[in-house]
Length: 134
Image 1: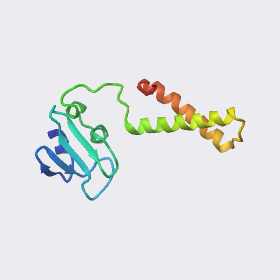
Image 2: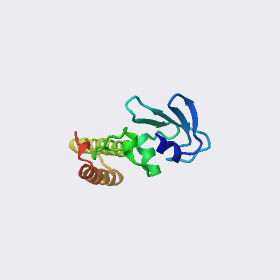
Image 3: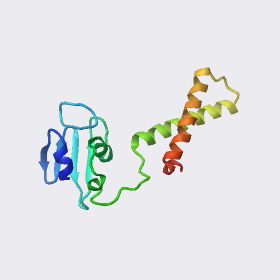
């Protein structure tokens, strides 16, 4: 956790192994990033301003991810929340579009374009993050 605390701005101690700081993922003037050392040595971080998690904070700062996980190696198939959310939204768009086609409902050109974008992004994300596929 020392690596993280040294890289952050506005760090304030809030108790035993608990801190708040300015979040490096978004710009702000008040500390909204909460940091805590877990019993297993890993670092728990969450920004109440932008929703960033520890992984996103460490990546934004360019820090070694092993510290985040208490010295353990990071799984190569980790999928950031933002990617997972985009993927899930695109899957919903694709399902709605396909249901509309089956029911012979009117589909606007805008909806057809959005569907093509969603399908393209789904395919790309599934190649890059095989763990997304359920």
